[in-house]
Image (tube, rainbow over all chains, first blue to last red; front, side, top):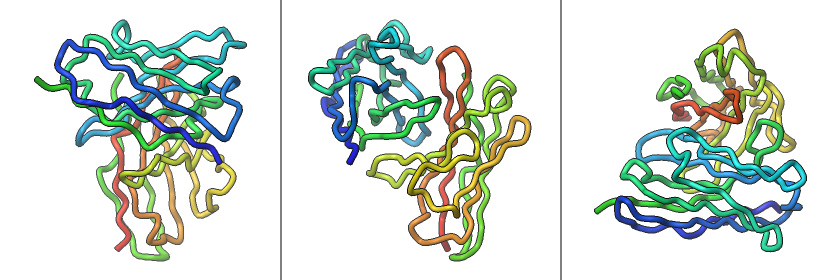
Length: 119
Length: 110
C-alpha cells in the first residue's frame, strides 16, 4: 500500500523558516517525482512544486508565489522528500500535502501537515 | 496564474447524476489534455479520480467520468452514493512545468 506521511508543520513567525518532511512507502521512491501541494484556509488547492528523479536530472520546479523562498530536495536513501520554506509570509499558512507526480497527474497524496505563519 | 473556475457546490439525490464544470483558458485546460480530478474528504488524503481528461485509475468506479470541450472540462458522477459526498477539485497542466487547480466544488448527496 502506498503511503505518504508528512511531518514538520508548526506555528512560525513571519520571516521565519520551517522544513517539512514526507516519508514514502509502498513504491520505489527513487523513480518517483515527489512534490507538494497546499490548501490555504477556506480556499482551494495550490501546486507548490516538485522534484524530478535523479535519472531525469533531479531538478525542482516551483510555483511563482514560492519561487526563490522554498526549496524541494530529496534523500532517496531515506525515501524522503523535503520542503524547506524560508522568508515565510502569512499567506503561506496552509495545509501542505505531499504528492507523487506521474505523467501530468498527482497519483498519490498524503494527509497533510498544517503550517501556520502568524506573529 | 489564476485558479480554474468551478461552481462552489453541487448536489443530487442518491442514484442521480451530478456534473461539475471546470473552466480555464487556452493556456491550461484548452491547451493540454492533462486535466485531472481529485476527490477530497476533509481530513483525509485527496484521491485521484480522473486523469488525462477522461481516464480512470484502477479502482475508481466507472460511475465517475470526465470530458472536455474547449476551455471547459467536466466531471460527471452517475448513480450518486452517500460516499461520493466530498470536495472535488480539477487540475490542469499549464505549461512550463506548472499546474493550476480549480476552486473546488462541494458535492452534497441529499
